[in-house]
Image 1 (cartoon, rainbow, N blue to C red):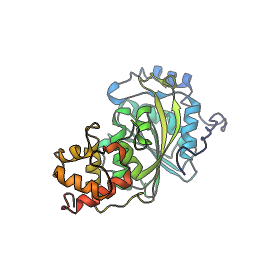
Image 2: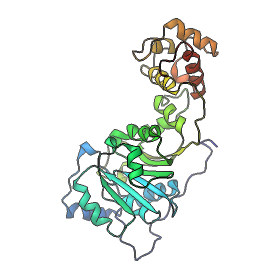
Image 3: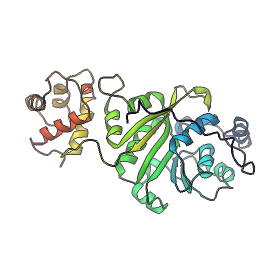
Image 4: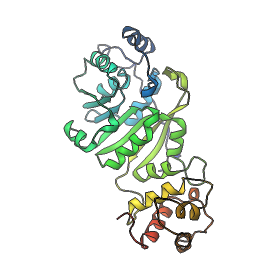
Length: 313
């Protein structure tokens, strides 16, 4: 089913919970109280914007379809607003935080939740296979997070490309990035990220999030996107590395034709004649641009050019 035909996901009412549980950290007054207590100053280098809207948090929880037996991974828990909601609904949450100033805050805020495994580390520097094994993430994991926007793409692609067990990724990202992830051929948002994400997962834009849902307010609009991991890629190719190299080169300079983009790429060694011949062989015009090709077309082009010699075997 396409992302455009799915029914909207209803947010979970987070106020409908056991009154004996600790107060919701995400309540604006509670977030402000924590920040004041610790005299916390936001650091731009970590892309810190804390979510203070219960409806949006309820939308994230609903999108992730959190279950009692779920294993969850959170990247950048901040002061624990989303962590708390996941901990109350799932078996285990592994939360990775880079900012050492937040570790003591998190330990205090989440003291009532023994199923939270807090890790002080730079997620980008982790060996993901070893990390998942060390923390008992030995079956399909749900990654649920309000990601730092400046490293959204490398985090998501790193997760998919690593081969670690994932069932879905539900994340808050910059709205423009969310649109690119679900974009179709021919649209202005369509590009290398669209193809890479859609190769590994089925994207669904779950919610648009206004700037006033955060403290401090970000400079850009945000969105919640759910990426459901595919059991197998939607296309087959004999040389996956070559296919992605073609995709990256095709969108390096969008205004160029595919022939010029691929033959002029320093990462590839095909001549204009070879690219032109390959395009003709798969039924495409030599003046076509990368934005017109879907995953299947790139897979066929990669297989055709792979016959010239496996550059990425």
